[in-house]
Image: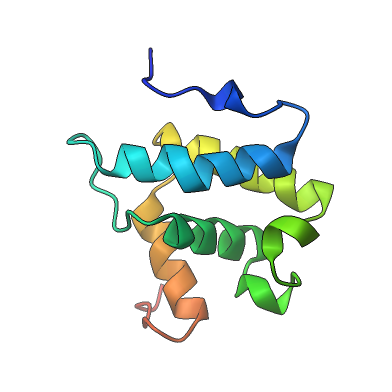
Amino acid sequence: MQHDFDFLQTPPDNPVARYVHMTRTVMPKLALGEKRHWPVQNDHCFQRIVLDTVCEGVWYDHITRPAYKHLSQTQALAAVHLCEQIIADQVDLTVLNQKSLAWRGKLRLPPL
């Protein structure tokens, strides 16, 4: 499948740069396309969702701000992997957004 963006605009051995590129450039661009029905479009929203998911809670309770300067190698690799899964529609961004908002007390999830 051919995409109109290039993941390798950032060095493949720099997961922080790849995470930043995907959340600041790639994902917002994809969100504007007709094929995506994502609940967010802005870079900071993608960053919130991805980092909250990686941290399994509000990211700034786990990572010093600014996050991109303080991500561990493990966190950065997990963030890149999650971005790739979201882009490939292997993970539901709407569900991740709801979890993120619930962790922040901005959305109540129904009981399982």
